[in-house]
Length: 443
Image (cartoon, rainbow, N blue to C red):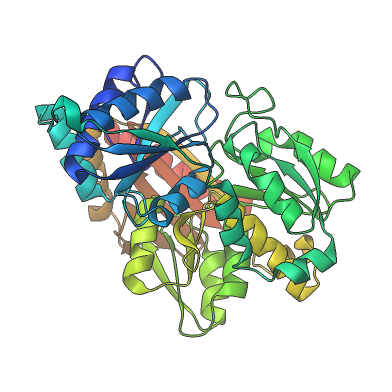
C-alpha cells in the first residue's frame, strides 16, 4: 500500500473513502489513544477523504485536531508543536488533480518510517482494529497553526537583514496548499510579492501541481516582466520549492541543492542526499571540507539518515530540501526563506550564486518492468559490469565520462535510468545505452 511518500491513487478507484476509513482505524489502533493532527491540500477530494479518515480515528478512541488546508511542512511542524500522538496529511503532492493520497506523520513530525507503515498495513489487512465503547469515541477540534509555522521559519533566518533588502519575489503556488501560507511568509520577510496561481483550487487551473521547466513558462516571463529578484514555484503541498533567477532562468533542483549546501555545510559537517543526485553537490561539499552521505531515493529515508548521522543539511534533486535546525522534512517555506537569507548575506543575485556551482548534464529515462523481474535485472547488471559500483539503491555505475544509475521505481512498475556527464549529449548517450541494455535483458 505505502510507496515512497505514503499511499496514493486515483480518487474513487484506488483511493476510496473505505480505504481512508480503514486506514484511520489502523493508524489509531497502532499509535493508540491520544490526539492526531490532520490537514489537507486543496484537492477537491480532500473533504471526502479527511472525513473518512477522521471517522476511523474517532472510532478507535483517538481525538482529531483539524488544522484545515495547509502545506505538508506546516502540518508536520504542528504535530510535535501540539504534542500529538501522530498526524496525517491528505495530499497527492505533485500528482495530477485526479489523484489523492494519505501520508502518516510520526510524533516527531517526520514521515512514518517503513517499519511503522508495515505494522499499520498489517492491522489494515487483518481488520485488527481496537474499536472503543460508545462513550469513549474521540472528539474533533479545529485549530489554526499557520501563524506559528511562519514564526518558526522566520526565527531560523536573519529577518531584519532580509527586510532591509526589500526583495521582489514572484511566487507561483500552483493553486495548491502553499496559497494559504507562503505569500504571507514572504510579506512578513519584507518582500514585495507578485502572486501567480495563489488562489486555492483543487482543479489546478493555472498549471499542473508538479513545478517543472515545462509547466513554469508563465513564472519565467513574470520574473523578467516584474524585474524581480527571484521566482519561486511550489508543488501541490508546498514541501518542494523550485527557483527562477532574476534573469528568468530555471534553476535545476540539483543546482539549488548544491547552492544551499555550499553556504550551509562547513568543514567536518555532513550533507545527505540520494544516490540519484548530481555530482555538483559532492563537489561543493567536499571543497568546503564537508562529508557526503548517500541514501536510497525518498525524502523519509533522507530525513532518517540525517537524524542518524547528525547532518546539517540534506534533500533531493526535485526541490525537496530539509533543514534540520527547523524540522526533519522537506519544507518549501524554509527553502524560500533560506535562499533570501543567502542572497541578503552575500549581496549576490541568484544567477551569480548559481554560477558558482559546477554544471553537469543529467538525463533520465524509464522502462516498463514487471515487479517480479526487477531483482533479476539488477543482478545481471552487477554481474556484467567491471566498473566501480554503488549498490545503495539499485546499481550506480561510475564510468570514465560520468555515471549511470539503474533502479526500480518505488511507486510504479518501472525501472528508472539516470545518467550524468559534463555535457548533455554524453549523458543522453550513456542513458540510451543502459536503457537499451535493460530492454534487452527483459526479452
